[in-house]
Length: 128
Length: 158
Image 1 (cartoon, rainbow over the protein chains, first blue to last red):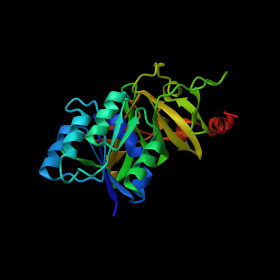
Image 2: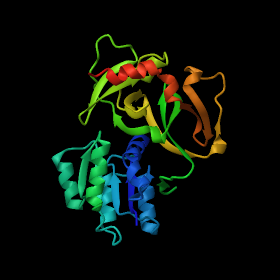
Image 3: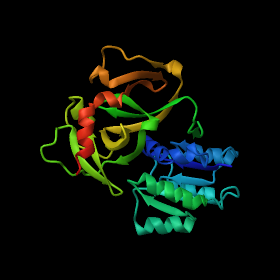
């Protein structure tokens, strides 16, 4: 059964770049990949019960909602509390990272990111 | 609304912008996308060769599609990306103004390119796609670079 990876980022370029990075994994049927441009929509779907993921990749600075606030909300939900979250951001301050850690995010990758490293992180976080 | 699925159905293209125009490359030709990084210039190289970059130990020529198509030079910015493609077995980085998205389409939305209305050489366009996203011109990578140019690139970094 393919693991489900969901990414949220307001940048189309980042979504396309990540999509290219996981292309082979999707082609091999190892993962399915879905994306949101709007974190508020993702949270709505999570509350409604229509969202499922084995790994969430989230930006931080998005116009509708901060990615760490989104992560904090998801981590409080029974369905997602044990699901890993990888933060993909331009933020690299220690303060921000420690906030992420307190919330329970699992990984942190700074943009601009390397597609091969992203694919490796995804494999590691999903144990595939 | 809601999640957008990275679908496998239909024909897929990576789209990007160059001088405000929307272009596409067949997805299977794209190896990866990287954010703009400073490239090492090669002395006396043609204007369309921006230089070479080191991608995880591999030296890859980086070509400027703007220069190749006779479009004005543009300073790289936050949105400038390098799309790494495979042409005749050679990995080449193409500098684009901005990567847009991966689009799925079906054969009914593909049509032959018109003989006008493009800012670039028509032979460089293999087909056009029409959809919600507007009209996208699909680049024919083999037509953009001659065999001779590709052979030079294959040797260029050494």
